[in-house]
Each structure stands twice: as C-alpha cells, then as structure tokens.
Length: 73
Image (cartoon, rainbow, N blue to C red; front, side, top):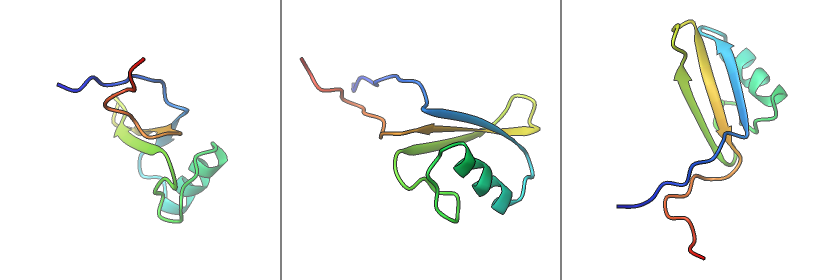
C-alpha cells in the first residue's frame, strides 16, 4: 500500500456559499491562488469542500502536487 505524504495547504480560504463565480475567482486570485477564468488551479492542487455549517465553502490550495510515494533516503 502506498504511503501518503502529509503536508499543510499553502493557502486556505473560506468563502460564503452561493458567491458568484466571478467574485469567487477574484477572491481566489486575491488570496494568491493561481486560477484561470473558470476557477481551476493553473498549477498545484486546489481542493474545495463545504464547511461544517454548510454556509461556507473551504478552499485549500497546495502549491505542488500531492505525492503518494515520497522519495526514499
């Protein structure tokens, strides 16, 4: 079974649920997340999930791809 490498998100951002797509893209860019006009990460990995209260969406961006098999020593 592959070992997963854990690391902290480069940027974590909470935005209100139902925010317009243009405002969402603008907020992601202001936070330093490189996204295209559709809100897709231009590099790295962008993950979005609803918050526990279901009123917000939480965006977590990792500047580099997540590695499943970290390099050995």
